[in-house]
Length: 257
Image 1 (cartoon, rainbow, N blue to C red):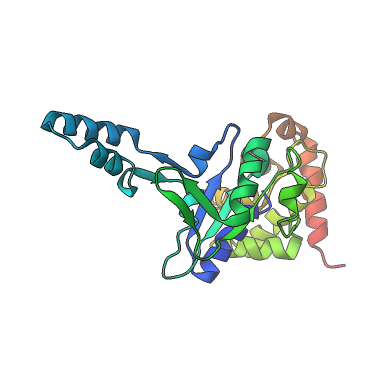
Image 2: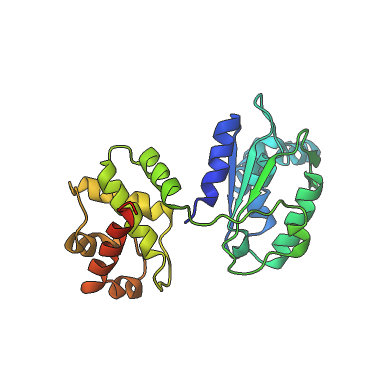
């Protein structure tokens, strides 16, 4: 929720490159990340050839395992350049995968090439720009870390978050935006299971805008807190006077010293 994914999007947009995203999840394997064959289309081709009779088995095999039936997944797509150069490859939430996939990824990103038994080795004429993100649900292997430039992305300070909100929700009044940012900043100091990220700040501002809210109040906060907090235990903590207390502290932080 701090904008790690947006870094890759902004980099691709700024460089005019394609953005290719590999969303990681538990159980992700090479066939889902690199390539697979279009099995249904291959079966149709086989049945068509059999119906026609006299099919050349060798020629049919070569046709079935050609680029026409190859489904390229993100890692293979990232090896292809276009007129704008190599793409930006975002490997998002790497910590969701397992150690075997991480080992495979380490090999693939070391040489920027993939070997497909039926087609041979495909090499990247220009290495893609690779961004890996992790939420630290588990530690990423040191061998992979050594090949990366490490950068910790923390929650933005008040002024930066305000600038982000004004850019992403410019239609919101500045006074309301400042209250929203100050409240969320104060909320992050509370003992919550899941602290709100920048995405929640933007969503909340847009929610308030849609409801024609011009200023925060404990009642408004109670009615719209689901846009900011995503766990019931966290929402329950802000019931009653707690929301009023945090709002008071947030407003106090807006007063120049």
